[in-house]
Image (tube, rainbow, N blue to C red; front, top):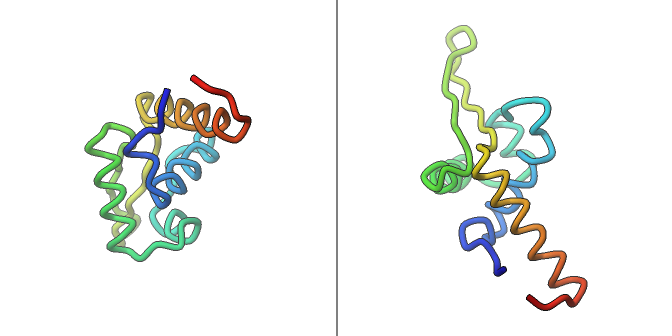
Length: 98
């Protein structure tokens, strides 16, 4: 097993880790992901789009009053990919070969 080319990028790994950590609480809103990742609006949006196209995250857009709200959550495909990537990283750290 090798690295997941989509998740391997550092900012996408942070996003996926944040979504994994919050998975029981439901979707994570854009400002929280921005705070966790340290990304700009445009950079975060671009990486979320990449993850969404890979079916790793689902994006929900709605309004709270008149304010737009964007939230993201892991899909089952994304959760499986994240677990696989974490297993790969553990194997690298522990010196385990495939």
